[in-house]
Picture 1 (cartoon, helix red, strand yellow):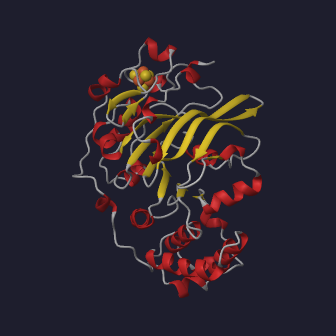
Picture 2 (cartoon, rainbow, N blue to C red):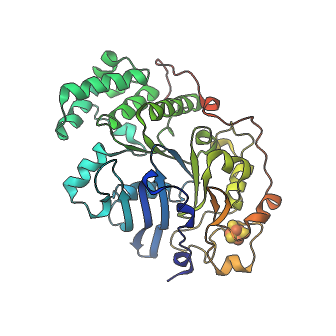
Picture 3 (cartoon, rainbow, N blue to C red):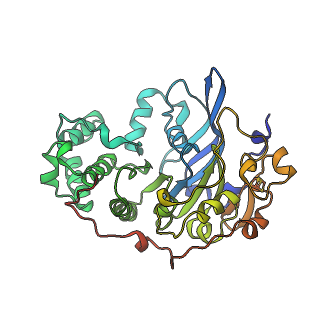
Length: 371
Ligand code: SF4
């Protein structure tokens, strides 16, 4: 057993009642065996996702965020090897062990219960099929009632500030980037899933449209009691609407807590460095200064705490042992031996006022030209 495996600690997951949990991820690992060695691109990860929450998963590119999303739905591409346990707690009925499902059961679960918008999904629209065709095809493939579902689609499109009759009868290329993204969100919700996982869904859009889409997602979450997992490299983008944030570094979670608590009182030196590089919470991550040093190579992850080569307060214990999660505050956990010293060592300031959903709310413009 490596020191990283020994660090598994469930304490940070045990703060809420069991029936609050909709997805339970236990010891999830993904590895790719390559000529130059074994690449661990998800490293013994544990997480509980709560019913009806909006959870933001944040980290630099290549930190393992997308792999985490793929693992939840047993969608890791070959030759990746996924191990661990992913338990889905339905509203009613026995929990489902996702990694044990047969292919047809998995296909059903993916749309009916847990829906996912993959990175770059906007380009997956079939250019020869109208938008209506995409909705009808999905409804038919799942044997759902066409009339009932299409009426739901019209409702969803209206809530996303799209005119149903206009949007349904055009081809995808006739929509702007922002409109296409909203149509895609409606498509992912066509079968009324409980969970929506979105992997960098707004990366191709301009900042105003990204914020507009997030604001719409927030409204949909409230209306439909959705659980949303929003994966992004852009911490400021998601901070204002997420209930909780979970920060990933080197294929593991390093800090988890309520969004505002993390923003105001980050305890892990990496999270603090991320926030320090944000001139203001309104600044997109693309415009931030970089944190010194390189993200680890998945074939050669540093022993002990993998952040130690970049950490200004690393000591010998950090080189030798992988830290467990330490309780910083109620519902706030950080995997760092020296979290109590991090505030003095890595200072940052957030220049905006109160962080609320309204901070990222802009009026959606149906006729946008973004993308
Ligand atoms: S102080 Fe040690 S344990 Fe904490 S982040 Fe730095 S290297 Fe890791």
